Each structure stands twice: as structure tokens, then as C-alpha cells.
Length: 431
Ligand code: HEC
Ligand code: HEC
Ligand code: HEC
Ligand code: HEC
Ligand code: HEC
Ligand code: HEC
Image (cartoon, rainbow, N blue to C red; front, top):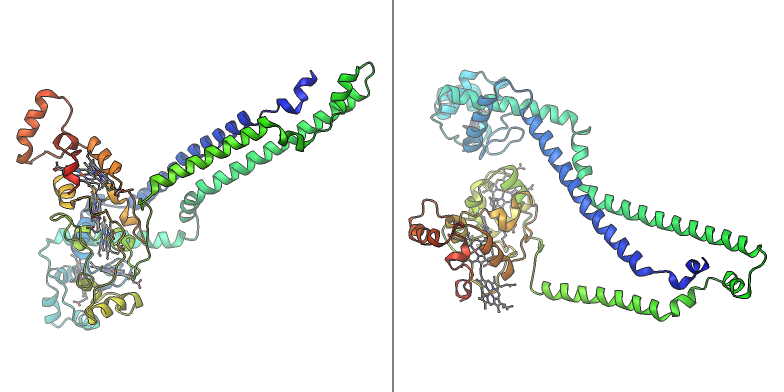
């Protein structure tokens, strides 16, 4: 019975392994929690954006028309090239709005006081004329009304509940994990304390007992000595072993990371935000990255493309002034390159985006959510090869592939993958 109390039988390795395993499973559990929380916020968002509407179909049609035609110059709640359109249906009646959208210059030329004043206020910027039917314009206004009213209710509740849980959810995984680790440590310490108390009690009890022989006495009186344990070869061996494994693992990880820049997000000379431009204002990637569908390289937009809008938007902003400075000095803006394959590898955007029908987000992540662009994928050879093994070739409506598909289906019932068209051949990617 006393043998179980002896320090030699204390086994740190299984306990340590168990501890590490339990940490891992905690981490795995915390992720679905975060995912669940974020999907909650999504559904509640869509719920509010759909709730409280009178004629959903018209609002949806209006939203599409607005985004395709008006968004470049108008927002609901802020001035862009043209005025904020929130509440415009209260400023003017429907007939005036219809006439203005169909041909604003005609309304201004007719001498309408309001229109003339507005035209002057906006530096005589000519609004495009739209050949829309009355119902189409009504649907746009229905959408604007819906957005105006929703914006008001969102403002009202901003400080309250809806925003807060979303933020809490974002922070949750990290804090949750630390909380659990701290909890575990506290529990372990408590267990230790209880064990020591039990040992103390038992030794006291045994010391008072009569009729024990010398050997048993020796064990009972033995002092718990840390230095003794530390000096034991088994202990030293185990510690050295664990240490060795950790060192080896980090060396191997380090070697795999040589030349890999995943997560690289350099500071750019102008605080250009994809979240704002591609996310909030839904400007098409193609509008700025003009080469992406037709050439090898996607292109970084020149300052002239920025000027299409910033000739008029936010002209006073110091960040925008940097664009003007670049144009005046006839020097390109010195963007810091984020993605960079070594020269020995060949990559072509048009092949992947236009022919292969791959989404930007598959390789670049959710760019439209990024304030600062970050390299999302590792861009290693293994990454390219894996996708070529897994991805089907987009053969629909591409006569080039007809014969290949026919040949392929003769000896396989799997769809044609990139590897089947030579996507793993060294020479395809290496010059
Ligand atoms: C090229 C930029 C541009 C586009 C595109 C544009 N607008 Fe305008 N809009 C303006 C400007 C600028 C004004 C201010 C009056 C002026 O300068 O003619 C204006 C004014 C208006 C007004 C009057 C606002 C007020 O406060 O009374 C309405 C309504 C309007 N636009 C609706 C639309 C709708 C609907 C669309 C889309 C179908 C649209 N606009 C597309 C630039 C634009
Ligand atoms: C209004 C113009 C504009 C739009 C729209 C835009 N971008 Fe960009 N993009 C830029 C500029 C400017 C840079 C260079 C500065 C930077 O890295 O932030 C850039 C950089 C990038 C880079 C990094 C390039 C590098 O250096 O390796 C990627 C990837 C990218 N954009 C993808 C996208 C995707 C995907 C979309 C659509 C969802 C998009 N962009 C929409 C202007 C734009
Ligand atoms: C299609 C129109 C459009 C194009 C093209 C465009 N922007 Fe913008 N940009 C906007 C709008 C809209 C805003 C937000 C305006 C606001 O917040 O009032 C904005 C805001 C910004 C801001 C934030 C400025 C501040 O002080 O808050 C920067 C910086 C900026 N843009 C840089 C650029 C650069 C650099 C380019 C060219 C690569 C570019 N933009 C191209 C429409 C555009
Ligand atoms: C199959 C993966 C893949 C897809 C899909 C993809 N890209 Fe890229 N992108 C890359 C790689 C790889 C690079 C680095 C190229 C290099 O360094 O030569 C890159 C580089 C870029 C750059 C930096 C400039 C350049 O051309 O090197 C921009 C901008 C860019 N991508 C935008 C886009 C946009 C916008 C889309 C969607 C329309 C897109 N990419 C789709 C893999 C992809
Ligand atoms: C997201 C998946 C994906 C990734 C990642 C990817 N590719 Fe591809 N790749 C494709 C698809 C799909 C095609 C087939 C396009 C077509 O139909 O021609 C393709 C085709 C190619 C081809 C032409 C093959 C041929 O036989 O015509 C080359 C070259 C290529 N990729 C290079 C690369 C390189 C280099 C990388 C890594 C930097 C890469 N790809 C990463 C999906 C991917
Ligand atoms: C789908 C495209 C693709 C194919 C197919 C491919 N590679 Fe690569 N390879 C790459 C890319 C991209 C890199 C650069 C990776 C990096 O920078 O981490 C690379 C890197 C390499 C390197 C390392 C060079 C260095 O400087 O580290 C070697 C060696 C290499 N490839 C050999 C081959 C051989 C041999 C084959 C044929 C069996 C092959 N590759 C097929 C895309 C490919």
C-alpha cells in the first residue's frame, strides 16, 4: 500500500500528454463556437434587412437597379458625387424625382428653382440620364425608403444590443481558450493541494500507529525531496526527450516556412482599403485590376483610375491628396507588393479566372473584408499542385475541351481534373 505514495512511481509523461491532448480538444471546441456565433450574427443581419418591408420584390429590384446605376455617385446616408438620397422622397414629390432621373438637365433647363440650386451646389456636375420606366424608378425609391428607415432604426440601437454580441463573438475564441487554460491550471493546483493534504493525514495517522517494522517507519518518515526527483535519471531523460521533440518540431516548421510569406501584410503608402472600396461600395475587382481576366498579371491600378472618383470624392482628405501629388509629380504611387512568386514559376491570372472560372477569394481570401491586403495562401508549389489535383476543369461551353472530355470519359468516370490536362507537369509551371 505504501508503494503508491513513493515518488518514484509518480509518472509525469502520461499526465503531460493528457494535459496537452485536453488543451488541443479545447481549441478544437472553441472554433465551432466562434463559427456558430458568427453565423448567428449573419442571420440576424439578414433578418433585419428583410424585416418590416411592405413590398419585398420591388425593394429587391430597386436595390439591384440602385447598385448597378446610382451607387457610383450616390449613397443613402452620405454625400458622394451626388447628394445622399436618404429621405429624398420627402424633399421632392414622385413626379419631380421621375423627371429628374429620366433627364436631370431638362428639369434644370426648365428653370425649376430647386433643381437649379442643387446643380449649382454640386458644381454643375451633370447627372447621367436614365431611360427607366416609372415602376423602375418607384422601386428604386422603395429601396431608398427601406434603407433610410432601417438606417434610422440601426442608429437608434447602435449603442445597445445588436452590435455588441457580434464584437464579443469576434473576441471570444482567444479569451475563451485562456479562460479554460486558467481554469485547468486552477483545478490541477487544487488537486495537488488535496493530494498533499491526504498524504499528510495518512502519514500522521500511520506515525501514531503501533506495531510497524523499521522498513515501514523509514518510508513514513521519508521527506518529500524535490532535488532527489530531479536528479533521477528517468526524470532527466523524460525532460530531455520532451525538450528535444519541441526543438525538432520548431526546426522542421521553420524549414517549411523558408520563403513562405503567408500572412504578409505590409503597410501601404496610401491607406487604401479594400473593405471600403470592394466591400462597402462593391466596386468590381475588375474595375481596378484590369488585367485579371485577360492577361497573366492582374495589374495594380494607376492613379488615373483612382481619379475617376477621387477627382470629386473626398478631395480634402490628406490620403487623397497623396494621389494628386503622385499625378502632379508624374510619379506612380509606390505600392508595396504583397504577392510575389519566384521567377522560376509561371502563373497566369486569365487562365485561372477567365478559363478556369476560379474565384479571387479562393486564392486571395476575403479581400473585400481587408483594410490592408494580406497574403492569404502560402503560394508554395504544394499549394498549386493540391488544387490542380482536386479541381475540375471548367469545360462548359469551351469547345477547346470537347475532344479531351470525350477521350477522358472513355476510360474514367471521374470528371476531368486539372492534373488530367497536364496541371502537374513541371514544364507547365517552370520555365
Ligand atoms: C454620374 C453621377 C450620378 C449618377 C450615376 C446618378 N446621379 Fe443622381 N445626382 C447626381 C448629382 C451630381 C446630383 C446633384 C444635382 C446635379 O448636379 O445635377 C444628383 C441628384 C439626384 C437627385 C436629387 C437629389 C436631391 O437631394 O434632391 C436624385 C433623386 C437622384 N440624383 C437620383 C438618382 C438615381 C435614382 C440614380 C440612379 C438611377 C442616380 N441619381 C444616378 C449624380 C449622379
Ligand atoms: C478601387 C480600386 C480597387 C478595387 C475595386 C480592388 N482593388 Fe485590389 N488593389 C488595389 C490597389 C490600389 C492595390 C495596391 C495596394 C494594396 O495592396 O492595398 C490592390 C492590391 C490588391 C492585391 C494585392 C496585390 C499585391 O501586391 O500582391 C490583391 C490580391 C487584390 N488587390 C485583390 C483584389 C480583389 C480580389 C478585389 C475585388 C474583391 C479587388 N482587389 C478590388 C485597388 C483595388
Ligand atoms: C468607383 C469610385 C472609386 C474609385 C475608382 C476609387 N475610390 Fe477611393 N473612395 C471611394 C469612395 C466612395 C470612398 C468613401 C467616401 C466616403 O467615405 O465618404 C473612398 C475613400 C477612399 C479613401 C479614404 C479617404 C479618407 O480620408 O477616409 C482612400 C484613401 C481612397 N479612397 C483611396 C483610393 C485609391 C488610392 C484609389 C485608386 C487605386 C481609389 N480610392 C479609387 C470611391 C472610389
Ligand atoms: C488560382 C489562384 C488565384 C486566383 C483565382 C486569383 N489570383 Fe491573384 N494572384 C495569384 C498568385 C499566385 C499571385 C502572385 C503572382 C506573381 O507573383 O507572379 C497573384 C497576384 C495578384 C495580384 C498582384 C499583381 C500581380 O498580378 O501579380 C493582384 C492584384 C491579384 N492577384 C488580383 C486578383 C484578382 C482581382 C483576382 C480575381 C479576379 C485574382 N487575383 C484571382 C493567385 C490567384
Ligand atoms: C484554386 C485552385 C488552383 C490553384 C490554387 C492553382 N491553380 Fe493552376 N489551375 C487551376 C485550374 C482550374 C486550371 C485549369 C484552367 C484551364 O481550364 O485551363 C489551372 C491551370 C493552370 C495552368 C495551365 C495548365 C494547362 O495544362 O494548361 C498552369 C500553368 C497553372 N495552373 C499554374 C498554377 C500555379 C503556378 C499555381 C500556384 C502558384 C496554381 N496554378 C495554383 C486551378 C488552380
Ligand atoms: C502547378 C505548378 C507547378 C508544377 C506542376 C510544378 N511546380 Fe515546382 N514550383 C512551383 C512554384 C509556384 C514554386 C515556388 C514555390 C515557392 O516559392 O515556395 C515551385 C518551386 C520549385 C522548386 C524549388 C525552387 C526553389 O528555389 O526553392 C523546385 C526544385 C521545383 N519547383 C521543381 C519542380 C519539378 C521537378 C516539377 C515536376 C515534377 C515541378 N516543380 C512542378 C509550381 C509548380
